[in-house]
Image (cartoon, rainbow over all chains, first blue to last red; front, top):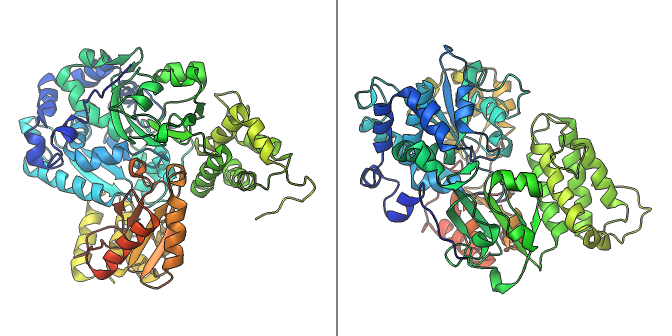
Length: 442
Length: 161
């Protein structure tokens, strides 16, 4: 079956490639009409009615229902903060960068709607430091929105005030984790906090705080305009709406594609207007369905025909849709090499707070390096599993437990568990080195 | 030291936050764009502006890889080798550039995923994206910056006035 895009939040980007990020381009294509509608329907109708009815779930990775997250804010406690997580760093995810660079007004409109709904007057966007152009465009858009009265005091005569501070990170993947992000925003090293208290109770500056992803917030103007129930008609079951999938690797047409949830991986990879098939018409060996932290799937029919549905994937295949990044690897790829590079990433990015992660990711990286480079030893694979079991007891049976504060450490377990599940024999065949050499620290 | 113009900017940045310490990262970016690196002197000045001890500024800044606490070249070339770039030629681009440039003007570094996987392999030059590279194209882009045909951002990615 051939599937095409369903463009909701990427519509302006495609309709107005020449000026989608400018105030004129945005206003000519319906920007800030959702904000007017939000003011007209009133505060309570947004979160408790429209967003709840839409079934919107967070697009950052965990897929937590947005309306529920907002409802955790304690009544009568102010000030409250809204923090937009724009620290996109999950390997192979590149949707938020596009949404920021090419439609910053959609994001600002979404922020204004969310802030109005949760009674927040100061919102922050924590944008990844490497996104220099995105930062520039977002700052410009905030200034334009202020000049037009969409931000500032008494917005559009509603009596509601809002200011937005755009805050650049400085190169730390861990700051995409919401409590590490808050630490970083407070001027500290980006190390995750122990929860509880959750950010909704004690977040930024120990005040009630909502942290939402860029794509989640960018969806709000459309939910308000079309109505939550109408939005929920898109998608499938509890995975409502559309999502932007970042497709990369060995496909003919890598890129961001916005599709209704519920289409299959095969649709995404092979539809002529989406992935367009595998490079040089080779076969899929394996693919990573939800960003680097996710467990892998293979080119088997039962995997390719699985729907992009968060609950289905978790319950039936034990993988997560995560950040919506789909990385495709053809039959020429050595899976141990990919696993090693992912482990190297997690070892580099471990903040060092929890011992199992700080030490474990380094061990996994070193052992995978020698396996991937032909120097593996027969006992190496079981050693990997043992190290992983110290980070995530129950390694091979997702969902696993974790011995760390945040999910970064357990993420290194995903590639190892995937090797164990699908490529154990291939990896063991690479482990032909002598078994008596002592383990070296380098 | 911040120039008078940047000092004014720095004070305006501090004023945007409910707590001054939040301004450490933005001020460090500002200092790095101005000086080309984040010097101990700049960190002391940031400490005074944010009303914390200099050691706290160092403690925070040393956590983040974008801050260069030693002088680097005028051009910071960041090459991604994470998985999508790994299988599309990123390591070859990195190796070529690292061999080609061993000077005070160009600083080549290996970085993690830059969120440009749709155009892999990718690199940034002073945080400006360049995608769909071969080793030769990457070198040509760096040369274009060196010749002044491409105008680089500051080493922290800001526009330098």
